[in-house]
Image (cartoon, rainbow, N blue to C red):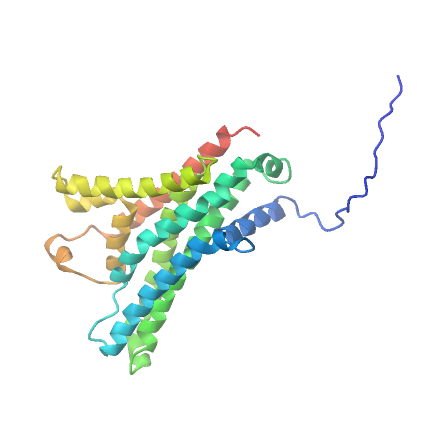
Length: 288
């Protein structure tokens, strides 16, 4: 029996660059995910949700800074009020864009091709999760940083104001990190369970709304303490944590004091861990 095996040169362009291995594969998956989250290099339709969320959140920040500037500080910059109007927009951003990163790979059968190369399931999952979280971090941090800089720069004496609120940069970093971890982690975990983008988007929105509804329902109907009930909802918990981070208060805080800040921090980290676990479980079940 003779071996008639032959290799034919079909004229395709050969790759002669550096083969970077697993590290290069991880970076490629991560960077492509970030680009997808913001619709870069894609059609105008793919950019609609990111642009809408960015514009609306920036308008809220500008409105808050304008009101404070016009009244010469009589209306203070309140991070809690700005974030209260932005949190649902961040949910919309994750719901619209996370399925583009995770669902379409399954729908178009791209995942088997990716996993036959230098990337493992764990590396793929971590790169995709990191791209979703990092993209949301950019969005949230930009909003908070603009508010922070405006709070200092739009007063008569910026140096004096910096001495009063300069340390707000640490809550800005901390809050942006926690929001991106909790919201991005949950969104990525849910999106991975459906190869259909529309179903994944609806599931993410439904999850956040359902958790908020259960939280409010337990407080209003079941008689559960409102501070305990809000721990079921990442949106409600983040609203409270924002005010704690920036030493803000309202009438509700005076009549019904919140828990310690560390409890809300641990809760948001827990939501992020649940999202990462959901993503890992999904990838283990997928056949390639």
